Length: 598
Image (tube, rainbow, N blue to C red):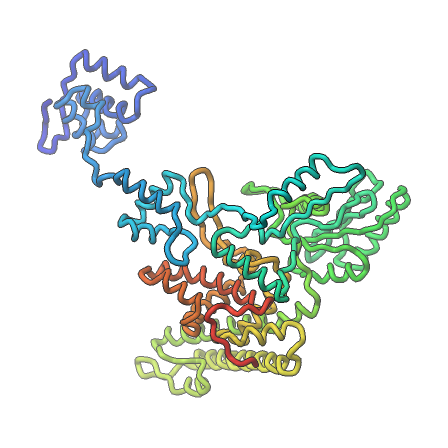
């Protein structure tokens, strides 16, 4: 090999006929690895006396790569191009005995009161890094946080009872009706030591008189569907019109009618379709109507139910839609989709759609003060930020608009140049202060009226639940009102439904060998989620000796700030479930300090 020029921009590579034929064979072989083809092309281009820059351009590599493989060919020939240099490993692999120890310890009981081994706990116990533990678990497909077991019966006559049941199914007596009654889902799905302890505690409370959570399954219809005597209709509602589509027994076509937003016209249309079905020889015993929850709320469902119409409200997130980037969307396509989903729900088939619980007018009105106060607090924050940003534009900092005499202090403010505030800016700030004072008075009026209602009617609506929650130190009237009216007044099925409604459950992403969490699902009530995360931080200050606070500090004693933020969400979820138990069954969380009632 010969070089020309100080920077070796031109390199002469001498290639024999035998090597050239071999290099050409490698380049033309489609089964060869791309890296081998690329190296051989570099040598062939160099043998044609091309400059290094041109060789790099044609081969699609850099100039140092060209020099590297020219040097390798000069040292080892064609074999050097087809062979990679072996390098010693940067880190010694984990010994098989250590891997076996990790696997054995993962399948054993974890120390203390924890339900399963965590990666950090295992790494600290074994003396390896967290990533090494994770690689071992991924290789052997271990997931310590996913426990699968079943409930064993402690009945000594369990075997004889099983034989009797199996024999009854295999050889039933003549003219006998065999009924099968399943256990509650919350009993079957109690996994792990903590879940079993929770199940035994709930059973003990039931024997003492505490009610179990009521089943509230809105994912399927519990009434049998007789399609020959049921008139089915769905409504696609908008601000300007309603598109009503129906399935009328005895009529081949599926009628559809666009109406003005008028409930009386809707009821007349349903009665007209009923008359058409009766003329076709079908007696209509039930009218089932459904529409999607949206801007109009649920007032129409209450109005229809008062007139003997089975009205349901579909949760908008439970309808499966096409996932094309630009899917066709019209009222007629949407109403056809609603019709298919509602028909599957009426048949009792799961996972077609989810209905929402229709609250009464009094329950909806009880939520208005809290939501109005939340909006006013947000508006107050925006006004304060606007005032501070206006003053910062003039170089003035440290002004506190929320003080009582803040409006009078505006006249005394001076810019860094010693000048008073400009006239237009001062007038704008005075108007902002007037709005701020008005919002402050409205917030105080809402809070005073709420306390007065609690004092005058302590046993009305959700007031007993609010007064019970305010006994927990760290839970104020505003938080108790939020939890009672937004969450606990609803007939939630179990603790999983409580956490899911609060939007504090995870969003798993599992496909093939991939197992990861995308974070919070945020599919529940955003007000509950924000309020519970704020309450969780407050709970650590006011309930330091409680079991939940101690659990949090044990998990985050040596953790970073990001881990504390992650664990505070877990604490908020546990705290929400504990407060739900307190409000529904009277069970006080362990170690929580109470104060006198309002």
